[in-house]
Length: 424
Image 1 (cartoon, helix red, strand yellow):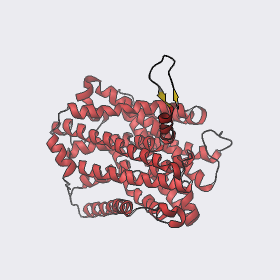
Image 2 (spheres, rainbow, N blue to C red):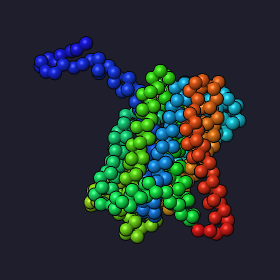
Image 3 (spheres, rainbow, N blue to C red):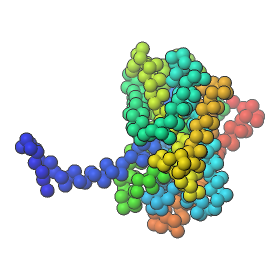
Image 4 (cartoon, rainbow, N blue to C red):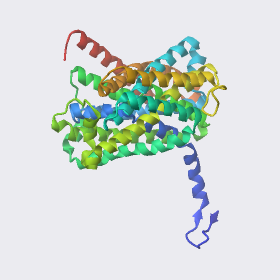
């Protein structure tokens, strides 16, 4: 069927247009989840990795990108096949106690990441000399107010748009004129340093790329969007594209920091102004403003998403009323958990005098160390034929996920031994 333009121009092929409608309808959960992962914790960790070790962590980032795609695909597939969230599946299969254990693990990881988001807000304002004791409480209240009283969906779209400023790292990485042979060496030739700082950054990069909250959030989003297994191929594409682009940006954050901060002898970033230097080849004197804008947008968006993910997961698992469309009276537990997460996350940043950069990286290390708990539950569920039928995990998927889990546990053991014996 064809429908001609009124001006007599080229005919529009409605049949071709209809073919892309399912893609447009399904696309979103994977891309949004992955891009939301480039939050202040991710930006800070990737910048620090480039500053401290230039390009030598890029090979690991490439592996983590593949692992991210595999893990995200698992979650999306479980959501499409079972039409249930991850927390609900854990409760049904392993009982309330194990579900509570998984959710408490996620809550601790989410709380750390929520703190990192408010640390990002503090860092953005401190670039202009505004103290955290002033900026963080106001931001926390506005985030709470928008979600509880306003239109969070509208604000979400605005901030997702503003977060695109971090694509400027691509320009900065190119314009800094790095030694591309060294970049290629770091990307394709694995190297490892038996230093505690290196291991901390190693775990932090994993923890900021594949976070525990993402698995709960993505699966719930697929279920909420009503994706069925017959439409799953579009969601699978969505997840793969999201995983690629989030780490495409991460790659250039490392390259930009490695090409600008590392040559200047900045091995450890102490403040946001130093981190903003990585954007100077692209933005010049406006680098600080560009960095602050992106950091504030990413932090504000994730500062709402992380507490919401916690609230959704608990309520979905235990059958309590939930949803931003409901009033506080209709869903008191949902809004109570959301409010508590906001208060704790912002309060820790306000009242404890942490170095914001170091604190943010440590929260990503915490994410990495807690990730195996969530991964083990996921692997047990997705390999159960009674739950997944013919859609159980492939051998390659299992190898990738178990490899990631075992690697994190091994790194944690190595770090513990090095700390006890004062090595590195």
